[in-house]
Image (cartoon, rainbow, N blue to C red; front, side, top):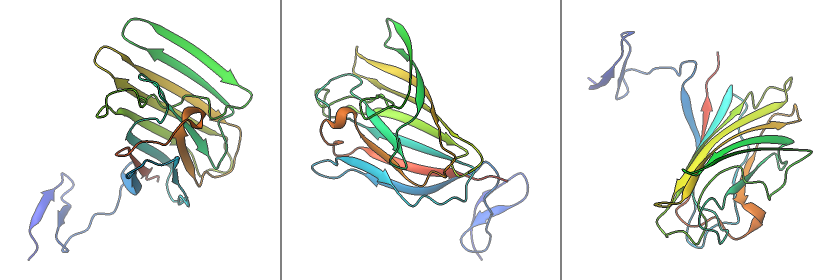
Length: 198
């Protein structure tokens, strides 16, 4: 007899071996995780992403290799391609700003707000990235990013939306320090999830 660990309102149950519950629409399933090791890494890449989900989400705790304290930032590529256009709203506790760019972005575009190497060694930024309809070959791709860092009196929070002028399914994601300036430091952690569709 397997012990029941959790019961649900629909009378299904989760136990050791006796019961199983199929993933429901909207459930998150872990695809892969990366924890950066000693010496850091020039980039962090998720490759061969399966096309079996409706959307993707990346959750991260990370730092940048740039020698900047606050909001040194990470860039992000999709299938080795940068976003076509992006909008940004940013606040730092005393002021707010908005900006937009188009015509093709590069590795100088700060999409994920995390601290750099001149911040305290134990300070990391957090981010959540949603990539919508990533496998749908009838749609161009859109992304939304919420990220920020707190440096005890400094730091910022940032909201980005982005557009990729491509209907190709996204099969890889690559993160790197803005301007390619230094390795993503040790202990940075990235987790990729798939969101189940109908």
